[in-house]
Amino acid sequence: MMKKITLLLAMLLVIMAAGCSKGPAASGAAAQSNTLVAGTDASFPPFEYMSPTGQPEGFDVDLIKAIGENQKLNVEVKHTGWDGMMNGLSNGTVKIGIAGITITDDRKKSFDFTAPYFTAKQVILVKDNGPLANVKQVADLKGKLIGVQTGTTGASLVESTFGKGYSNMKGYTDIASAIEDLQNGRIQSVIADNAVIKKFVNKLNLKQVKIIEDSSVKTETYGIAVKKGSKELLDKLNKGLAAVKQNGKFDQLYKKYFAN
Image 1 (cartoon, rainbow, N blue to C red):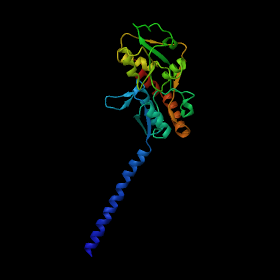
Image 2: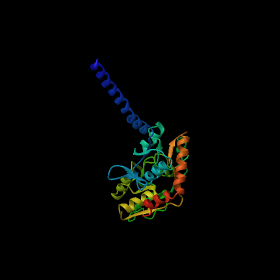
Image 3: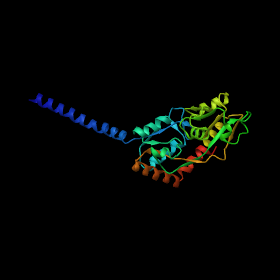
Image 4: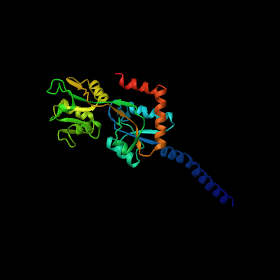
């Protein structure tokens, strides 16, 4: 009888231990399920780029983390690439998109955007000792090879100027590759956002290049994207964005990434 009682007690203790072990596992699973994946394209400094440790960092990364902290949202930023971010927003694997995304009427058909948080403009980068050093506007690049990042407003600007499928436009997955080709003479110009071009020129200490601002090109604004109809999340992101602008955090980040 004693043996039977001892055996039953041992079994009960095992069952209790197993039951207790489910608590932390469940909590961990719950925490994971509450994590909001923020997709980004970490090839767009100073907004987002990969750190030496292989993690995304930059203005946008710090901004979405500050917004998440303000609104008590568990945000995890992942480098998905541009297409991965956009596709992820559509299929739900990415809840938030932040990568210097320009708010356009076409994009608003598929995504909802927060209030704008940054104003940008497309500029032209050429060699200052080359035949295009004196161009004034995008239209002056007709017949020349133009490098752009695929899927961006830089590509849209070229196509709106010269026609969709313009044969002299070369698409890249990142602006760094386009700038490298410009330096090596494989293309004659690059069109991209002004803050990004300036950051590359300063960071890489590029010589014999010239940034040209086309006065006819309109400014554009960046917004944080969510899947169409994600009103609750969008409201929280807007509240958080307004809060970090009001409490000085936004200005602190701006100074950190754009002062130099």
